[in-house]
Picture 1 (cartoon, rainbow, N blue to C red):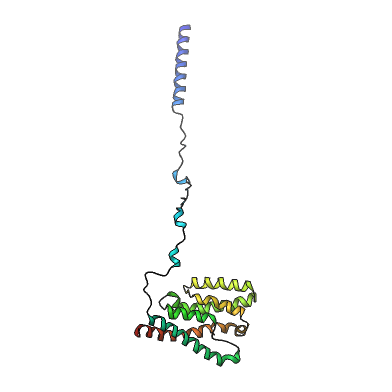
Picture 2: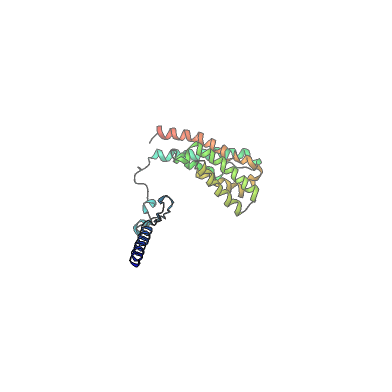
Amino acid sequence: MPASISSSSCSSLATLIRHESNHHAIRPQWNLAIDPSTRTTRRRRPVVIRAAGNLAPNWDAWKPDKASKAPSLSDIFWPSAGAFAAMGVLGKMDEALARKGVSMTIAPLGAVCAVLFATPSTPGARKYNMFMAQMGCAAIGVLAFSIFGPGWLARSTALSASLAFMIYFRAIHPPAASLPLLFIDGAKFHQLKFWYVLFPGAAGCLLLCLIQEVVCYLKDNVKF
């Protein structure tokens, strides 16, 4: 009897050991892998360090353009003659407008003469650029004066707005940037109000365009 009990106990103990070993063998393993789609990576922006030699000033900008040939006498004479004729006509118009206290020989039109007669192929001499910039910048000057009155704030606001206007409308015409300042500081133009958009800037440019056609024709066909 004790032998059978001993044998039965050993059999039960062996069964329990096998059960425990199987239990540990089939224990589930948790999958701790991370989905690559949810993983965020932080990229470092490259840092570019330029050589010190690139910071040297470009002295070629201070020298005449070597690619362009020397101008002929006719290339100098006809633009200069056109500027003389333009200021002469505008001066005669001043005499007729003297009783109104308004002058046509304003400084921006002198700069327009230099652009139209000396560099007619540059973007600043395009008709669209000229008239769009002249009218837009003049209107900005009147508006800035109406809001801020005379002073540094009106001038600064008008000039910055004029540059933004020319860049946005792709109508870069450097002489037009002086029109707002001329209106703000020129008391004789205040009476014109928004008529200043057309006169004297746009009206003067129309006259200068007609003279430019004559100057360009003589410059191309009458050489000496």
